[in-house]
Length: 113
Image (cartoon, rainbow, N blue to C red; front, side):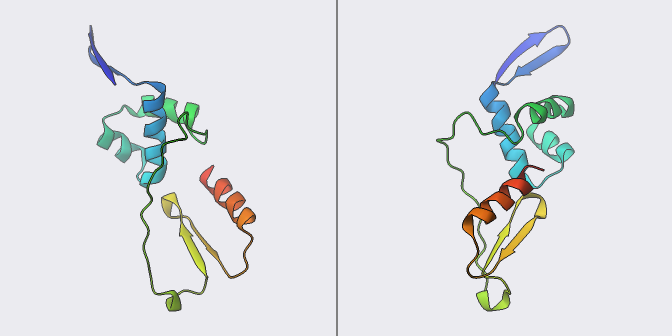
């Protein structure tokens, strides 16, 4: 991020990859837009513009891998064979013999919203 002094004060300029990373971080944060913007010191209107441009699009640099928090629970307590908890509390449960391709499509559709 570059910063410049202008007549109205200090202005911050983010590159496209920085803006995309902010959107990606928001989508996996579980925070509201206001909370996320306050925590990351970005104006809500600016962030809304980033969301319009970059939300749901593949990132420029797909080579970066991101770790995801995983919680291991007692499988006897679960009714499903696999439980996936997505951003914003969305939850997908599948049983034995599930179709992996269908699960990918469902997750992609849920993450698009």
